[in-house]
Figure 1 (cartoon, helix red, strand yellow):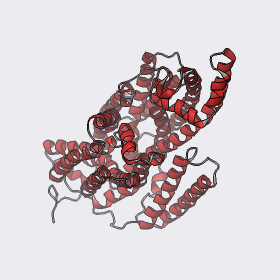
Figure 2 (figure 1 turned 90 degrees about the vertical axis):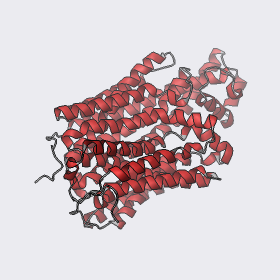
Figure 3 (figure 1 turned 120 degrees about the vertical axis):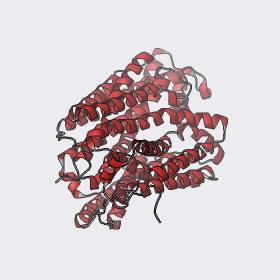
Length: 535
């Protein structure tokens, strides 16, 4: 049966013969699908308290995020390879279908365990969508014209980071939390319908239809084990526990097996030829390292703004709005510059340097920092981060034949997301460890100055009271009495948190500085002006 929009031609260059209106409609459909996947990374956050109060299972609520991130990260390279084999259109539509199914199931969940499983299904759909979205742009436009569109697609993630938490909070306050998932249905159906009608079905007939099942299985095992270890370390289990050591060892063993399998495979999931390219290796290294720094800012900056300096916001999503608008601006402008000039190396290096500077400015913030200063720092960070989104995807895509577009694109995204997970785990563990040290010091100083009574300080050693103090900070209390925690307790908690976050931002800055050094080694080659295979 012939899909609507199927074209008889076999080569990706046939897209250039399509009417401009049809190309635009196709891009709109792809953008809707990408927005669907990007929104679900953030929209659930502000609705989680309602979910927990309804379903229970507070001890497992973090898995609502973890299941989604595990599935979406591990599935990226596999989805990218499958799209190279079978074409972008059937894979994209399949991804939307899986995502919609996961959304319906998540909305009907009756237990926390059901929700976790169904979020994993959503994550698989998101992996297929994200792996194909940027590759579709590569099918439609050659590298020389791709920058302006990559900037727009990268901006979708910034928009989703702003709209997601705000939308989730509004739905949770005014409707049932289940509508956080049901709202995906109309968007997904419209995207699927648009793509079904307008998007041509093209695939390279020279790519062998052989799936590397062994490679896929070992890659999933290696990635899942690593991400589980990083997610649990410092939270569920200590970093030096047998559980974490066992998961890391399993990940290392599976990685070695995967590398061996890929060398023997006729159509490897992650071709070793990718790593023979210096351009790809630099893009991989920079996106992994900037992923660490990006999550260091996104996760911990709202805590600093609202808990340390007390700049209350109407919702948790509004806090990062200046930075996310800057990400959108940086991504869109850098994409336009790449398309107009044909050069990407300078932008890639400059973007990471600006990001490093932004994280340095974060590390200089303290309890006396004004919100205006924080906004300035977020703008610097956001513009730099946004500039990296189109730059490293385009540089990697341009270094390989068009028939490898899907796997190249998904691999760059895979390393960015893995870096983000790694950064969240490492920095979260650092915050918890340093918080305990600085809390003890702040309490001692408060007792010495007479601001805190010794009996109150003794009560703070109880984990329940300390937990309530952190809950008050997470609730963005700028005064005493919230959750029954007196201001005398909140002051040392706030002081300890400020110093601890200073160290977290310093670590993120150091990682970004390493990324800037790696970026210098990027080799620039002329951007291809067509999608025909290079000789």
